Image 1: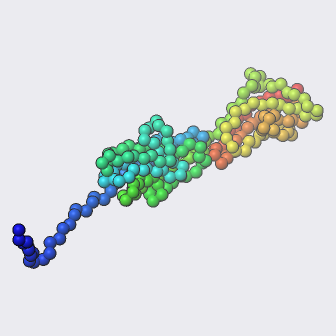
Image 2 (image 1 turned 90 degrees about the vertical axis):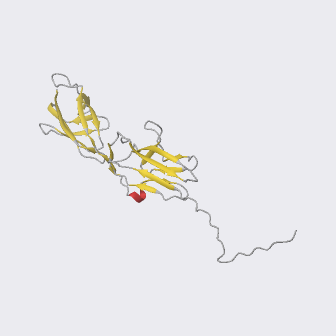
Image 3 (image 1 turned 30 degrees about the horizontal axis):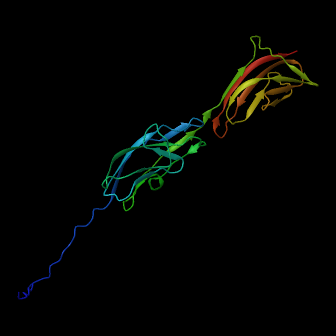
Length: 227
């Protein structure tokens, strides 16, 4: 067979393939402030949604320091959670986030750039701002073991009188006492004893001052006699 030569006239033909679709992440959030009273954390959980398309790697949601996330409301909260795409897609997923327990009193705020994030390889990372706080607990003082006559058994130790007083004290503030007749004495808060130097009728008045993590409370009073 003879060879046939074909010549194309005009501009050369160009072949172009369709560009691959870029990975995309979506995150929808609307947070109110996360808060709890010192010693009672974590905060209540709040939720937001994430999704992704054209992903070639897992979609990872990461909480900033002092926060934690979970895939379920009552599950185990961790620093981050991960979602594996199916054919490049992560459908809408609900993520739960909360302020960690065990924090000291203070503000725990993050601008969007450093807040909770949703990321995957090649996609633009989505972020959201967080505001949170741990507030001071109210101090509480209560007397027990004072009988109906406001008398209490005293214990002689040398020349001093030790009056044990049982109290419930919640807080880290300063504990102070006063006495109705101004007689001398010292307070041993660790052993819950008041050392008096004279017989007489006394009023024990406890006041809790403000502390780092607690607000003050009191005064709370109780009368008793030493014979």
